[in-house]
Structure formats: structure tokens, C-alpha cells
Image (cartoon, rainbow, N blue to C red):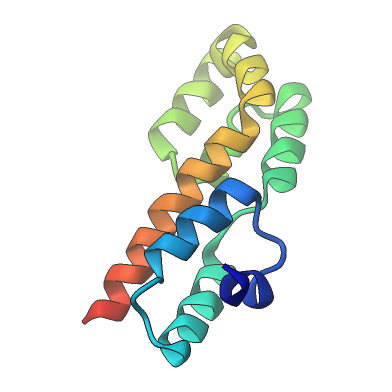
Length: 115
């Protein structure tokens, strides 16, 4: 556990646990490569929260575009964040949205390192 904690101290506990299990069989050099690539790709929950708040007042769906959900971003944009209900739900669930995005990116980086 300390290996990833030393390389990426900004990880949330759930994310850290998942990442640690993902890189358990990698060498130290591969783990460092994973950490470098993953830290460049991962999103912070605070950024998603800020974009959700900005989207609530200006352009709905910014948070969805930011985490790569282009279709949902367009839906939020054209429906006013699903009449603000979807935006309010995203305000509450911003950590879950970010975690799901980060898990997909971690899996992508891990599969990239395999080959």
C-alpha cells in the first residue's frame, strides 16, 4: 500500500485501494510509469465539483464534458441540466462521478502497460 501512497499521496482511500490492487503484480519501474501516466490523466473531485457549480449558473453539463461523457454533456446542455435536477444530483454525487472516471482511466493505463 505504501508504494502507491508514496507515489500518489493525493489519492482518495477507495481509489488508493483499487489502484494498489491494480498494480500489485507490476515491478517498481512499471509502477512508477503507471503513476506518472495515471496522475496526468486522473481528474480531481474538487474540479468536478467546481465545474458542476459553474454549470449550475452558466452552462449546464460542463462537468459531464470534463469527465468524458460527451453525450450526457450535450443532454445537460440542451435541457438545462435536465431542468437542474441532474445538476443537483451531480453536485451530490461528484465524488462518485470522478471515481468512476478515474477507475476507467486506471484500467486503460494498466492495459497500456501490459503491451
